[in-house]
Image 1 (cartoon, rainbow, N blue to C red):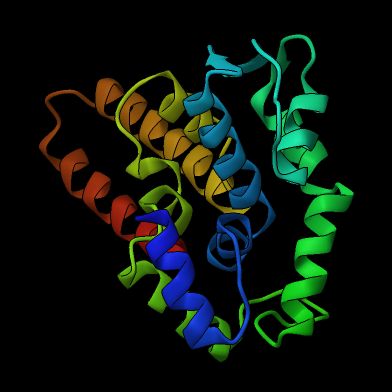
Image 2: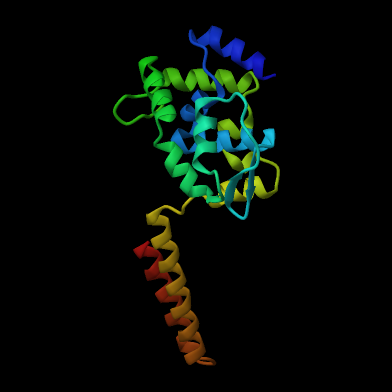
Length: 200
């Protein structure tokens, strides 16, 4: 199946791309490293447990990205540290440079172009692995999926919103406990909720 999507998408796109190039188009640098981690765990040369990666074997002949991942964790290392380090490595830079040269990625912001989206869609139809296209959420439940999903940080804006919601819920709980049995306070509580929603 892997050979099939390589042949078909190469013919349609005019250039042979490997799964790590498609991973960059689909999800940027983090997706490239995640895809390498999945491939290496499947080969049995890398283990992922409790959100930590550890080399467990020798990589005989691998892709430069896979070699960079193995070099980044000769001993146990946090998944996020490996993603950050390898994501800034020369092999990943080389992928970005090549994709930009092919017109599949913008040079300045490294975002997928319209041509890149067409090529990625063709690869998906030809059987590109789901975890390359859509990320670790598509992996079977287990330590690899959990470890990679745990490496996805909550965006700053969302984190602030969640903390604000938590404080609002605490305030409402305190107000409800203090005014227990007071019918009038019920209306005030509803009004406070409305104003809070408007603030969001």
